[in-house]
Length: 461
Image (tube, rainbow, N blue to C red; front, side, top):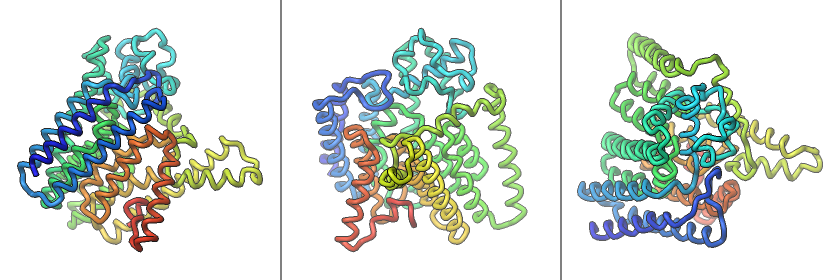
């Protein structure tokens, strides 16, 4: 078996190396400049990666030897080094991070108040996605502080500015591997090797995290670390880590009620509950104030976040919004709505649908208080499927690291499915069509096999 795993690792390494031949067009939001040859080339590489990934999982499905885990981690490092050496292919976000930090380090302005569009002579202007230049900083102050630190270190160096972000992505990725190993050691030791391979060799995670360098990885790293320390009963530290996640990218604020409800159930003594909650509130408040303080100019610093939350595209709708969009579009002649009005209704409808799912999940926690990891997973997946109106493949980084921790029926298939969807989105562009096709495929599969494949896919449990 070791020989077969090594061969598959070498095949995956070669396939990742072949990505170096894909040209990348700067000033592009996501996807390289496309023609038929590049589409076919990327599709074949993606197909090869997925087949090899699936074959490796099937091969080690019943394996419990610790030696295999070392081989898995070693090849994960090889994959990462290859992807670090290849310029970012699927997104120019790393240049956007660099450019935004330079607003303060080079021009002395507050990145939360001043957008990048006014600095056309900057070294990185022609590399940063033009679609985002009108927005001031929309991320949390922890990410902004890291970006500014990198900018001071790298100065005008094109190489070092990129390398520091890629190094952070590499370290973060292996930090997640470490915590997945530790968490599975607590909740399901027999699933450790499978869980590690599902994450460490996942081609979508490697592509989006290490090559495209999205800050979503750092956000979910803090969530995974927080889950580990929660399981170790280090409650104050786990809540601090969750705050750090929120202060990278705000979406994980949705997980705070989940953590607090489980914490309430874990601590039986009422006096101890109150003491921990007061300490936690004080620590989190001080940490948030310290991180916001260098940038604070009133609530105006959230303008970038507010503007970004309004962005929606019918080409990037998730599952529920795409169904709602097509339903309303079919009534367009009756309702006489413009496309912008339809998109606004879809955005509101998606948020309402997610709110129902969200509070339902919180209610189930109060009633059952069952699987902690699974509930966090369902919240993030629920947002993606029901509320996301500008869905990008790297958003799958929000829930895939949690999915590999869950040893439930259909979950490995779920990981493979969303890995496939994420990679195919670079080939077929329209995310909503891909999701609808797979939804219909699952429906057909459920009807023909008389098995219910929908709970992990739609967030029901």
